[in-house]
Image 1 (cartoon, rainbow, N blue to C red):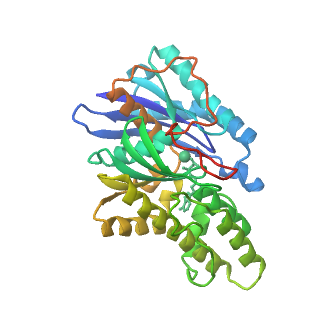
Image 2: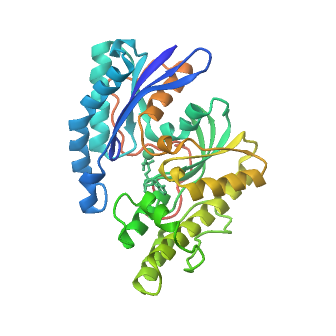
Length: 349
Ligand code: KG4
Ligand code: ZN
């Protein structure tokens, strides 16, 4: 049996978790703790990097203590210490990575420097032991919107990315325009329930295009115009935005499935995968293509440390021995370094 301590601090959640993998393949989250910083950032309508880094520095050590006590284990019982080493807000990433290095040194355990996106990409396998490679993955978070073929641990082929905003960013900006506060995604989803998704005509950027990528900047501007016109109920704008966003990801995912070749499942992960309309629509697409649909439970979709510990366990199972203690934190770290750059300025590949 292997046990890994996972640490996550790349954005605005400080998190620690202990996850085990039995020789039988059974996987278990022994303990996990998350401290959200929503109250810290809410007054600014978005994550303030310096405030985030300070909050991580204050909260991380007590959270690690808490999960060790909760699981009644010692650091020395761990097979490795895994921490997000990027991509993300660099101050926060450094807090988590330096903490993991110190713990690794003190406990004589290997350090595993984890790509946060790999944490999201492999998280569905923590919840579903039957999910095998290769699978089609729609990774939708606050900073990323990508379609990938997950071929194995550390082996990712990117089929599409966004040429401007990420999907979570579009939800957050829509929430800001509609005055729903921060964080935006869950607030938009909640309000959309009481709105009419056909009430406000909004564009579906790139739908029908042979170019495989995503674009949400035009949709966001249209939301702003619809709001400023004063002609629509806020709930109708939220519902119509969510529907337009869902139409975009369905069209883009269908195209990727056509081009990706054989896959075992269609999988969605990342913060926006917590959205019920997004999940249900993708489930419908998967059913129509006769492919299995997998989505981790919502609390594993948004940022958490269990997925980081799990990515560490996956790497150990592949024979990884650990990363050097001078591994640097990386603000950018693409899952598929071979992927071609796409047009557009603010590309978050
Ligand atoms: O994966 P995540 O927790 O952090 C990043 O790595 O970015 O994703 C956060 C993003 C935010 O943009 C948030 O608004 C969005 O996921 N999100 C949602 C929902 N829950 C979180 N978007 C739509 N509906 C939700 N229920
Ligand atoms: Zn994330």
